[in-house]
Length: 63
Image 1 (cartoon, helix red, strand yellow):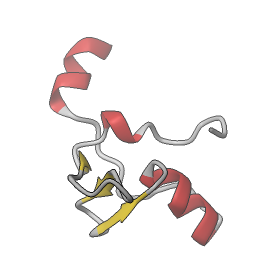
Image 2 (tube, rainbow, N blue to C red):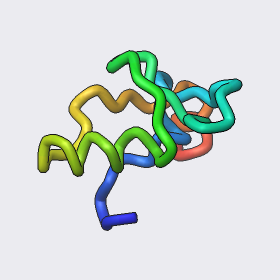
Image 3 (cartoon, rainbow, N blue to C red):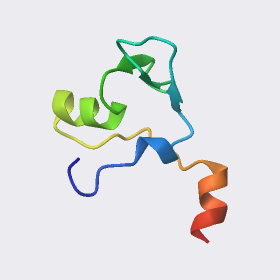
Image 4 (spheres, rainbow, N blue to C red):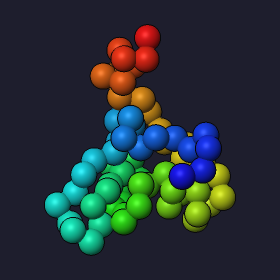
């Protein structure tokens, strides 16, 4: 995974799907993927994900 790429697992929009073929999802952009959504966003647009929002639980750990 490229450096400085948002960690989807710490994003409030990230979720695990029940689809074996596309196990990772992003609610903000409404898609499922084989890879972490931030990787697909970078590949498709050439830019980092602009919808990343840190989960509340991750905020508590970081502080």
